[in-house]
Image (cartoon, rainbow, N blue to C red; front, side, top):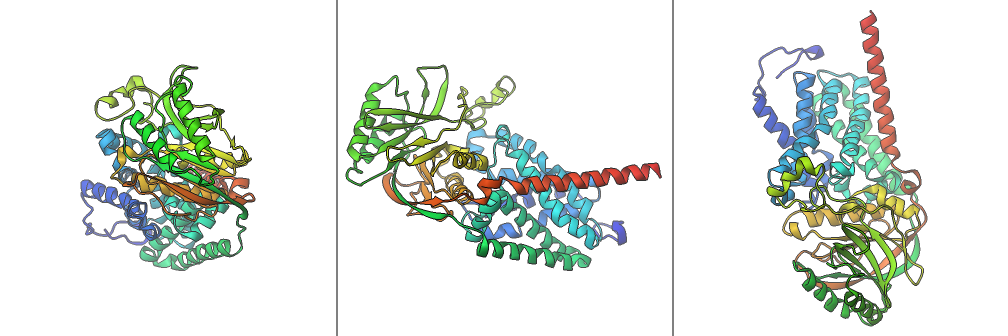
Amino acid sequence: MSFGHGGRRTGRRRDGLASPWTRGAVALGAGALPALAFPEPSLWWLAYAALVPWILLARSAPTGRRAALDGWLGGAGFLLAVHHWLMPSLHVFIVVLAALLGLVWVPWGWLVRRLLHGRPGPARAAAALVLLPSAWLLAELVRSWQYLGGPWGLLGASQWQVPPALRLASVGGVWLVSFLLVVVNVALALLIAVAGARRVALAALTVCIAAGAGVWGWAPGPGRAGTVRIAVVQPGVIDVPGQRFDRGERLTRQLAGRDLDLVVWGESSVGQDLAARPDLSRRLAALSRLVGADLLVNVDARRSDRPGIYKSSVLVGPHGPTGERYDKMRLVPFGEYIPARSLLGWATSVGKAAGEDRRRGTERVVMRLPDGLRIGPLVCFESAFPDMSRNLVRDGAQLLVVQSATSTFQHSWAPAQHASLAALRAAETWRPMVHATLSGVSAVFGPRGEPVGGRMGTDTSAVRVYQVPLGRGTSPYVRTGPWTVYGSLAALAAFGAAEGAGALRRRRG
């Protein structure tokens, strides 16, 4: 399709997008493209240009309504691609969820056309370089609400192995990384499609490079605060809880005499409440005495002291459970509970949705080991939430530990995606993170987000000891929080106010 000055159509469509079905398919594909930047493909460099086709498509939309639809379909395509490994569990319901959550990109698609359609001048191009990244962050913020599935697949998370991006995360969290990635994509789209805005686009790219270099060169980093020796026990894929416990016990016995500070088992490593099974408590206490360190296990069971099933991180010392316990607060929708079960309970008949809702914990917990080390436990996909690790560090945690189990998705992208989140959380908070799983990928990252030791893959049943460096100081992100999000919301509010004032003046005139 070709446009004359001001965006008026001057000829027949020649771009092959005349059919709404064809255009819809292109939107789905364009939205899915950024998923390749995440593990397991890990084409991290693709994130700097992956949004360009989607932007150019929405820019060319004949109407604002069509651009909004391009935003919706692209968002659905992105979520389907990033979460495709959920298909065996949710079946067709994953399509329904992607379609619903894709709606958060409707304003972004509409805004792309509003700012970039036709021949935008330098002022409109400059506004797009601020407002489109802001609208993208708004979409990421809305879908990050735990009841909508959580912040899995935030664009900035694709840069988990890029040191300059990790340094940016320490300043503004994953949100700053996402914002700058979208700025680069918008600038590239302007370079390709808008001749009159190329100077503005080049200036924006220069600013992004300068920001990255400036943060890399001058932003503070964590100080060194010694090291601790942490062992991770990964039993492998064992579906029977009792056999899983036995395997974890045998592996832990190999750690005798290794001078450890903590032994970490994965999520659901204990399948029965320890208060109701004193024999299991005694076996764990014996292991603690044998290895000379406390054990952090994870109990997935119906509690004996209150109704319901909880997933809990429980610290066990040489005399049994120490009383330090954290109950998981943010549960996986459909995996651990069904939202509005009276309406959506049918999901249990088409997939592996939770037959009974798990119960939520009510407060964060920072545990103190006998040597004084303070650890902040998280369970499973809680490591995807930047605010949870940030708040644990504000509460005094020196080491972050996430206990996870992705056995259901063993041969998918999920284990690698999940492990990569630990690098971001470590870089954001200047605190090392131990990511311990039942069946891989288990990994440890230092206070700059750097890998520590080797990782244990999904084909491994073993135990590994890590010499983990501790970080000193408080990162800018921990001090200030998601300031990039606040700034984005302010920019969008100012734009909305200006648009409203303009519409009011036109109506009065």
